[in-house]
Image (cartoon, rainbow, N blue to C red; front, side):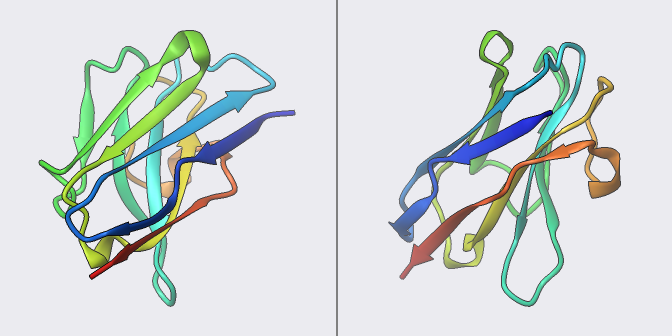
Length: 124
C-alpha cells in the first residue's frame, strides 16, 4: 500500500519562508512525476507546482512563480516545496501527489497517489 506523508507546514508571517516535504513509502516511484496542490477553505483544490522524474522539467502556477521551488530526491522518494515570500493568500492545506508515469502534470486527475495534506497559515 502506498503512503505519502507531508510535513513542514505551520504558521508563518507574511514575507517568511517554509519548506514542505513529502515522503512516499510502500513502493518505488521510479519514473513518475510528482506535484503539489493546495486547497483553501471554500475553494477547489488548485495546482501549485510539478516536476518530472529527473527534476529537469518543472511547471508552476502563475501565482507562485518566482517564489516557490519544487525539487525531489529520488533516492529518498521525497519531493520538496520551498516557499519564499509567503503571502496571506498562500494560506491553505497543501497536498503532494505522485503519478505512476513520467511527466509534468497540472491537473488533479493525472495523479494516482495523494498525501493527507499539511496546513500552511500565513499571517499578516
